[in-house]
Amino acid sequence: MIAALALPLALLAMQQGIPDRLAGRVSPEIAALVHELGTAAAARGLPIDPLIQKAIEGSAKGIPAERVAMALRVVATQLDTAAGALRDAGFAGDTVAIAAGAFALTAGLTGRDIAQLARSGAQPSEVIVGLRVAGTLVALGVPPAETVALVSATLQSGRPAGDLLALPGQVQAQMAKGIRPAQAAAGLARAAAAQGRRGPPPARPQPPPHPVPPPHP
Amino acid sequence: MTQRAFHPLVKLLLDGDITLADLPADLRAEGEEALRLLGAIDRTPVQFPGMTQRVMQAVAQRPSRERTLWHRIVEPREVRVRFRPWLLAPALAAAAAFVIWLGRPAPVATPTAVTVRFVLTAPDAREVTVAGTFNQWDSHATPLVRTGSTGVWTATITLPAGQHQYAFVVDGQRWVPDPAAPAVDDGFGRRNSVLTL
Image (cartoon, rainbow over all chains, first blue to last red; front, side, top):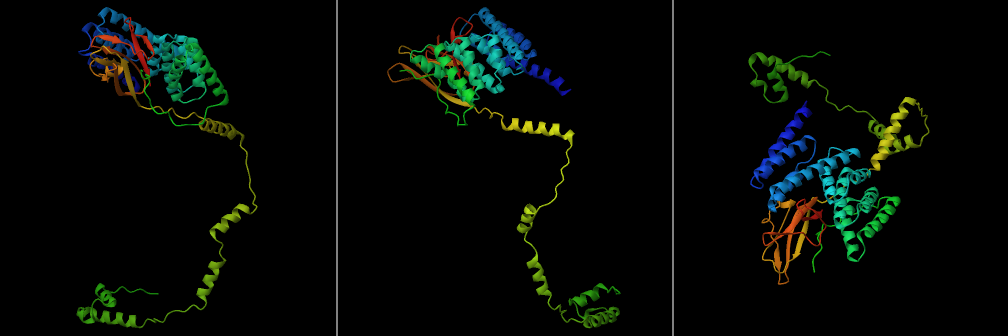
């Protein structure tokens, strides 16, 4: 009974939040489209934040409304695709994971890649980090096949999430030495696979937070 | 043995709180009898010869707690074990669950916020800001500061852990991706830089 009431109430709250977040930021027609797409997405258990963000981004950049509308429909499709891929991998219902999967699609991965990463057997929170890192690696120029191999091997090695987050920086460091992104990722994947065969490393403290963008000369 | 209930005032007399003269006339006879009975009690201490010695001997012979426990451990005793086959399956399941619980991976500990430094080299810029998902793409919210005369603009801010997309805004109108960060298509024909924390 409570669950039956909770879902419509949650959807209602989400829908009411959309106009508040868009007020004064986007045109009325874009606000109406976000409301329409967001309502449909929420009803299917999809996150609505990527839609709101894309609408605000388009408006802030001065993009024409019809172009923003097209981008919003692409985002909605990506959310659906990501959710389907995660569902296929038995990893459903997590809106944060769906948003991470949608980002990975934006970066150039496919629904099949997302399902493969989700099947890595890692904990849900690690899969979310894995999807984000996978998208980031593809954005760096690592081909999807090498990206999936590297992130899957790292997830399966039992290494902490901090090691996953360090992968883009490690690839960038090798690229700075003239190594191609695919080669850098393949080398790291072999190291992660070897680590996985030896078992997870002993617990160690989290690395201190550091700025991701490297300093400019 | 017979019991006799004295008047409360007579009890006060026996306790020494009042004197016989304080009693009402009709209670004086009862008071005098009570005093007489009290005086007739033999108050000679009762003697139990050898009692203390016997008690101390008994205490000395009693084994200490540690000694009793040691005897329980080392002394042979008969133990009967009954095997109930129907209990084997749940016991094995509980043992397997315990082993799985022991071997479970440690919870993911990730920082909730990370301080990052944005840097852009733009010698000719008059103003540089950074806009992204972390500030609702507000091109005025997060200005960068020019450092020296080298044209390097920087801003250090703390962001929640997660994934952020952003771009630099030069002179209030030109959207520029971070040349040092990975970038993805923004859906509008431009590029957004990506920050994964």
